Length: 279
Image: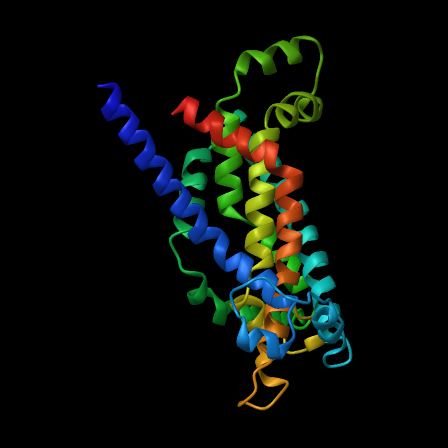
């Protein structure tokens, strides 16, 4: 029995190590390739750089008069602002749907969930026409404000807040706490694991967004970096794609995602663990 358990443990560790290698190896190739010259990358594409250099990043920041750097900060601004607003609205709406009783609450929530079944691509044409009438095209508003109405975020926060005991809220109300005090001192501190998970997921989603901004924006100065990054293939002749710059750009756009995960990782892991325990 112990021998079988040992064999099983070894097999599981081998599978996990293989999965880790498959996940990490492309990241290693990307980062190491961003530190190589074009000649070295052609000769040694998957190994460690012999003479690592940040020259590719310097060249990257000068492409099209610094367009990459401008779009990089566009992505940071849009993603951070959108995430903050999404979390704020989702927390307020989730609190209302979880702890308040009003006519049509469940019906409204069900109808909102139904909208999640509609592919985003189907909405692009009517949204484009609508935002064109509002004169929102080629603005930061069209990238930030519509994302506040995020049904997935509402669903996530509502489902978490439902599990908060009503006795905590009733005790606070007996002590004279109003709705805003209950929300600020009980709901938010109790929901921090879910808020951390939501912040990571929404920042990642907004950062990686491509089709929506590509449809709503034509001004390159306002575009996020994910729209501009593929154009690195076009800055030189088709016979000589600057892969070292492409890898440097991919490395650059990965850094904010790692930073956000490091900031919210404890809350994210807590939400996953708590969800597993409740399940």
